[in-house]
Each structure stands twice: as C-alpha cells, then as structure tokens.
Image (cartoon, rainbow, N blue to C red; front, side, top):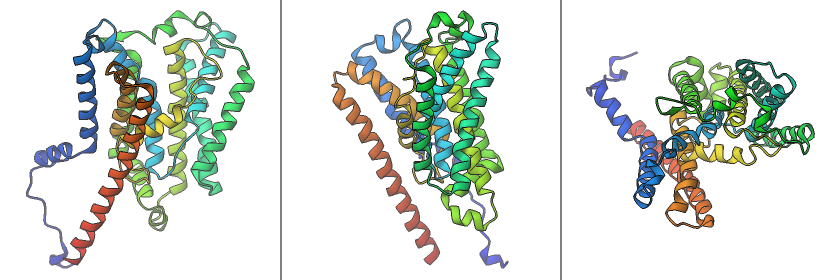
Length: 343
C-alpha cells in the first residue's frame, strides 16, 4: 500500500472527539425533549415530579417498555423487526402466575429463569423461521404475534391470576426501592448496560450492525448472518420473557390481555430513539430514552391540558419525524461519501 493512501491520524484529542460525539448525538436530542417535557409538566403541576411517589413512578413505569425496546432495537439493527414481543410478554406473565399457583413453594429466581427461558424459546422460533425460512421478519412475527396470543387466550381463557395468588416477596419487587431507585428500574438499567456494552465492544455486536447496514455484503464477507440474526431474535424473546415476569410483579393481576399493543410501542420507542428502521445504526441507549419519552408523554400531556386524541397524534408525529430525520441524515452521509470519493 502506498504512503499516499494511508489515512492521517486525527489531530483532535480523544476527549474532544467523545464530547463532540455526545453533543451531536440523536440520543441527546431525545433526552433534551424528555427533560423539557418533564419541566413543563412540573411547572404546571409540581406534584408531577415532587410528590411522594412521583419520582418512583417516573422511573418505575417505563421499566417494562425499556426491556422490550432494548430487545427490539437489537432486532431492528439487524434490519428485521419483532412484532411478537407483546404476546411473548403475555405468555411469560401468565406462566409466572401459573408457576406460583401450581407450585407455591417455588422460589423467585427459578420463576425469573423460567420466564427468560420461555421467552428465549419463543424468540428462537422467530429467529429460525426468519433466518432459515428466508421469510421477511414482518410476516413471520406478525404470524407468531397471533399464534402466541392465541396460545395464551386458550391457556388462560377467562381466568385471571390475582395478587393474592402470588407471594408477597415477589409482589414487593414491583414497589421496592434501593436508594430511592425502584428495583425493577435497576433490572432494566443492568440489562440495558449489558446489551449496550455488547453491541459497542463485542465482535458479535459489531457484526449485527454490519449485517443491518448491508446484508448481502455481510454474506460475501463471510459473516454468520443466520447465527447473528437468530441470536438477535432469541435476545428479543428472552427480554420480552423477562418483561413478562416484571409485568407480573408490577401489576399483580394477569389475564390473557396482558401486553396488548406493547409491540407497537416498543417499535415506536426504538424509532423515536434514533435506531434506523432499515437497520445498521442506532443504539439501545436511544431506544431506552425513546421508551421513557413515550411513557412520560402519556403522563405529562393530560397535565398540560392536551386531549387524548392529540396525545396519540403527538406520538405518531414523533415517529414520523424520527423516520424523516433518519432518511435525511442517511442522504447527507451518502452525499458526503460521494463528495469525498470524487475529491
């Protein structure tokens, strides 16, 4: 390789590059929108943030959607989508209740492991059908959304598991705090940090971005596309399973209608958080912030006097705006690459 083809090292310090990356990130923009929303709601009614349970609810309520959004983000990064997460949540939530009803002596840890395992198996079914069946993920997961929901409807019927059927120690997880931070929020943050670290540093995580950027090029380069895509669906299913257990602890009442519509909220949170709907870019941090923003909107807009219809319209506008911004940024990157090539 000639010397003229080598790329000169950047003269900008690593700290300054990191600061520039943070200040220009889409995650920061979404976080600022969230802060402004909370500030506006608090200015209108100070109990929104400063009442006895408001701080806890602000952190606790988004925990379930954050778990779903993290798994969904990994799938979308690989240029796929998982629409079955709400039904997986319903199945594992009902499984959680049944385990406590049928095996009263069972511990909390085995229940969490059972929820994770069941979710992972359901995600594996999605992953295998998408990876080896060569069928678009939208079609496969739309089908499993109805199949999994049908299973839980048949299993649960009109029965409902109540808080009295589950142990107090388990239900206490839904409200217990450590240093004023809810336990369920801590679980969501730990999962978020682990997945974010894996995607940022591990070879498998970087390969998922490469697959989402250009699946054909990834195959030609010799990447394990089927393995990585299947793993993404397994992770999404496992986190939806974990969300089901968390749902049971949070609400204490489980019916066949648990998690209805959450799959669309998870996709919306991911898109609003800056993950490209066509894969290859974005972070789970952004997806988590998007999830918190969606949940907070539902609490803040009524306080600001905005009718229900406009609340849904605001969410829709955020999703469309995020996709338009994503397309604009992709076009600008392509134009700069062409200009750099022709320079």
